[in-house]
Image (cartoon, rainbow, N blue to C red; front, side):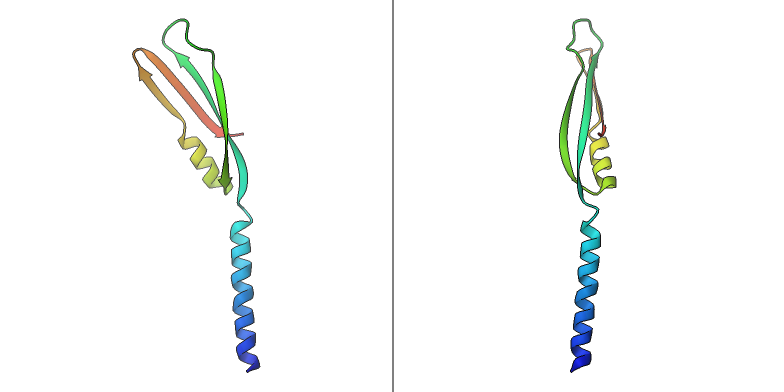
Length: 85
């Protein structure tokens, strides 16, 4: 009977340790996107926007960088470069 409780206790400790280890790397990160415009005179000044990402560092960095883009519409190019801040 004691072996049975020992096994259950050991399994519970291992599961707890694994779940704690997996969530301990999750933090809040700030993604900052710098936005600028090119192609014609009189365009708006460069701006930036920030938003929070709660994830691991690598996933947050990948999500943030994937928001970067370059679009051209009617001769105006919008360049958005995003990275963790």
